[in-house]
Length: 398
Ligand SMILES: Cc1ncc(C[n+]2csc(CCOP(=O)(O)OP(=O)(O)O)c2C)c(N)n1
Ligand SMILES: [Mg+2]
Image (cartoon, rainbow, N blue to C red; front, side, top):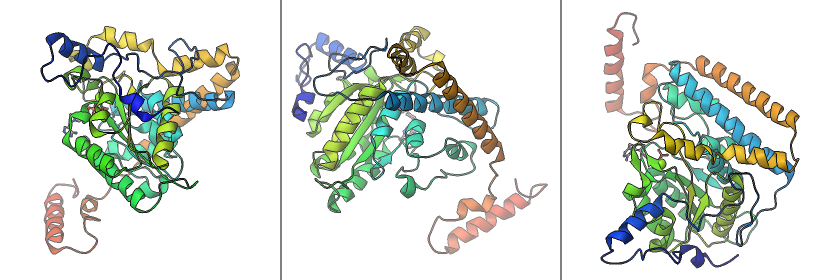
């Protein structure tokens, strides 16, 4: 594998990112470069389903493995659509769609080893799936019945973080701990951490601090930025003058841009980056260049700020379709296979619905439990006042 330094070099036509007084053309070129894939994009499967090679990142993939990745993506998309529908029916308060980001999440998620740790933001339902969390386990957060029901230690998957960028600090601290505990190096049981965040999060102070800490401690941390082109209504080119992966250079670690709609490329690059980190060559930034095909959340209306042409263009780069085309062309899958995946997806959706409506509303006092390890008189008084207030309504609890 070539030296990481290579990945931080701008291309021959790139404007000098460090010019003290860039010309107007340089600024415009820099802004454009943030939302165009560009020559540095690592791709192994084109939108037309053609397998291409890359001098530094390639992958040996069997028919069975590719069918598995396809199945993962179809199932998480179906789960995502189901949760979206459940919100529209009033069964969930909110949903955060992953539509369009399946390849980025499944490629990264499947590159993680069981010992590795992952820190998600709030859209990583596909990574959760790869960590063995059933989609219905995520729903309580969005129905308001729990704060995340999975065991983060058992699944090696931290609870969702809504505060933008905050999990990057948590992940940097965790990865520093892996280093201090001697879990980085040549041993077969060495570990790494992967942290997920969005393009918009890169404008957040916590992310910069996380970059600095991870860099100076050589932490085994893969920063996995899903550049889905939008931070709610703010496009990426309003957030950075240069492609996000090039920011890594300023912190002294490699940055790589990968086609986030290509599950083979995200898997190959993530595997490489995690292995580098396990060996002590971290941190590494991966920018997965992808697209949020649905609204930011079910509370958002993207037609207010973006044209539908953009979505139509990205539909041609759909992460699932290209794998399907490739499987068919290679004769690696037949209709029976595709039908069985559809049937599994339907079954998953039914299970989700059943679990969702069966989620019990927790008792009001639960919000006060587990705040402190020991009893706290101030909190107890607040709890009693809260319960007395609720008891004042007809029917008791409100
Ligand atoms: C600290 C903080 N500021 C603002 C918000 C409101 N907010 C929620 S999502 C979001 C945009 C995040 O965009 P990006 O990082 O690109 O992630 P994406 O939602 O596109 O996956 C903002 C500003 C927040 N949750 N936390
Ligand atoms: Mg975004």
